[in-house]
Length: 479
Image (tube, rainbow, N blue to C red):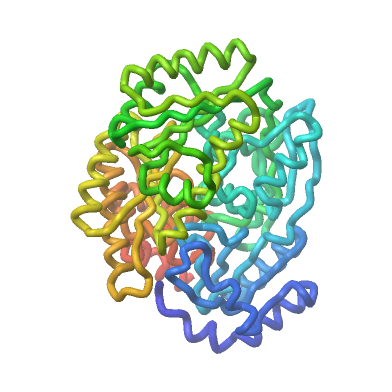
């Protein structure tokens, strides 16, 4: 991260006083011991306490804080629940964090027009909980949905297990209230089912806090399906499991989810969750939904595809308890892996047809770097989540794990994929952006940021390689 601005640090008392003058007394935190709670997000290898933290309850309070920071030229780091795995909410010592966690109100539920409007501090899971009595649900379901908030979901364009059929956040986001860096409040999108004019919602979703802070969101909701049923398929080879995914997608069957776990992950999961998974090289969880006849037809087709690849086991759930058992291990996979030691969780995406080759090459990279890797991911759309195991207390191990991770991400791009599917770029992939984009591509992206944030104060040192963004930042400082 860049060195903090000494001038801003020297003005810290004046900055805090200006924030306290326009906000409730309990909305500003500046005591060093209290700001330490915000020194990192879920990428815990890197830490830095911010200058101050603002915890607003309304859009007006967010706007007031943004105006102060803009006028005093103080960097702002937007923060949701702090579950980012890419360092997207990592602060700098001269920055003010504006967190959305207190924006927790459900503002409107309209099942006739199929939308819910919420403040963006509500958690992902609580949105569906609000909708359950109405027979509706919100489709994106990231693994951290118990903790992660809608604000972060929008910033990183989060997906989840069921994004294969229903899409990721951008496919389910209809409107947003956004506070721009100047403190101006704008409304984008609305309750219409399609974008009107320029697709500014598509620009905002996945922008990683570079353009503004979303305080309210209008989300598309869906009626709960008549029924759903998962099957578990075990294989004696990782590449064979990847080939099964590719064949299912090519067949025209559209499951609601296809999840993948390899043997390293399975060992940890079985010890932790005792889900009754088979002892094999890889497991797929494939869930289909619809009427009983539709479900039976889809499962029969999936069985036919799997049988051609000689599975170790094909287990079809017969009731809700068995369905929950199949999903239990997958839902607890990331927690279970923590029992094996420290790990880095990556987020590259590849074309589904390249899964067998990519898994093979990850195995070769694992041997080359001398570090074990577990593969657990959303296989249906090729959104991989390799978990690289290392020892944080062993000097040099973190750097080895990061080098291994960089090689995996380069591999994803080489086979026609991209650096991220839902975790974002943050600082983790910032210096790899040149692998996916050439200089003119990056220049266009930075020109867009320059329009929304001409002083380059929002989420500093994220997304864009520092060498590439330096001329833009220097020009912004001179304005």
